[in-house]
Amino acid sequence: MAFNIGLSGLTAAAADLKVTGNNIANVATNGFKQSRAEFGDIFTRSYGTISRTNTGAGVRTIATTQQFTQGTLEFSGNSLDLSITGRGFFVLNSAGNDDNVYTRAGAFQVDSEGYIVNNGSPPLRLQGFPPVDPSDPNSTFRTGLRTDMQVNLGDSPPNATSEIAAQINLRSDATTPVDGNGDPIDPTATGAGGFEIDNPDTYNFSTSTTIFDSLGTPRPVTLYFIKDDATGPGAWQAHVQMDGAIDPDTFPGGSPIAMEFDTNGVLTTPNPALTNLEFEMDNYEPLNGATLGTDDPTQPIPPPTTPGTNIVQLDLTGTTQYGQKYAVSSLEQDGYTTGRITGVDADEEGVIFVRYSNGRALPLGQVALADFDNTQGLQQIGDTSWAETTDSGNPVIFSPGTGSLGLIQGGALETSNVDLATELVNLITAQRNYQANSKTISAADTITQSILNIQ
Image (cartoon, rainbow, N blue to C red; front, side, top):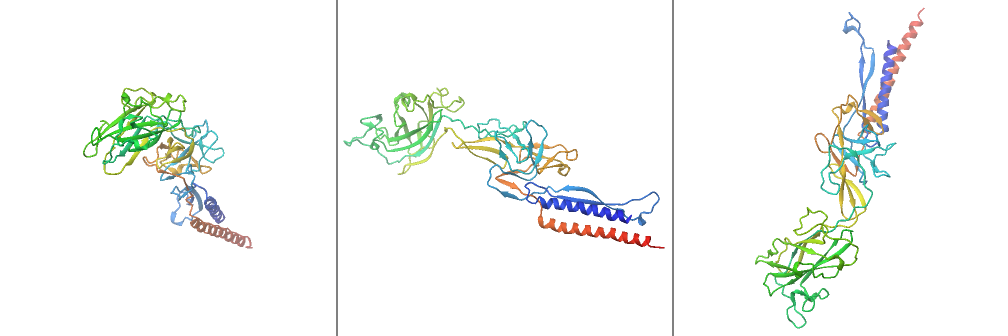
């Protein structure tokens, strides 16, 4: 019996050494969760025996349990490195296979087809929820549909400008420019005696921006402001030119924009502060057949207009006439040119954005996270991955930050939760236990030998 007890102790100590050694071996493995060997005594009893006189029969390994505590986050600088702060697992899947694999290791990359995959062999695809509208930076996500996350490696298409929004301050002490004879020019006229693009003496202030046509071609647009004292102390005329040319049909009726400010410097005309600018694209180089204006009839361009009719809305809301300085508080437009991918990154809610050279950031999808009622019931399958079992229960898969699921940290990896100092102490303890149990066998052998020597 003593031999069996000592042997069970050796077996248990060897198991402890294996578990401890495995923890130490994976101290640098991202997403690794340490394990702990748990033991129970063997106690045999037969019918009619008195327990207080029974002796134990040794020890056995009851379980090797995993410890799913949070590992430390290390920032890597790689935007596709993802880590989970809190509970949850990334959901992975192989192509054409519905068997999910779960991991905390978030070292991802893009394969030749644009799929986001891990570094396993074979690589497994990261699962996520697709956006409702991939062209909307603020799109919601279809959390009822889980798909392989794939980066569209093509260019981002251009978008024609449909609106220019300008917030400008015009000097309250400005006066109408004068011609060479000292006579005030006509702020509403273009050419001799009026506004001339090439003559800065014929306007008070100008500012410019770049708009884009439907093919992504940049086209410079300049706003010129001329004080109109003949109309009143708060009157101005605004001219608009594109590509260095004035189109006489840009404004309704061929006249520039008449602007009026009250005694408090607040814009009162036009009211509302919106004006349609209609550009005849055949008058501007390059003649590429492109159009301006929205292709979405729901955009807030005042009627009458139809998509792609070269109408751009000028919004002067917030423009003022204060003080003695010209200032541009804001000058924005909603068009953009063709864009190429410049990077991919993720926010804390697991939304992965693809960033383009035209300044656009479009949602690729939202990372799906899984949680289990009993994480210790998960089965380790290698490559720092787990598979569900009946003991773990079915996974709950949803968006990061909801329910019990943690948040996502982009550009960082979760390190192993192994405490090396603790494991080294455990290693010494397991070694001592092994040596001590070998002494039990040695002592039992000596006793047995003594009995065999009796004559």
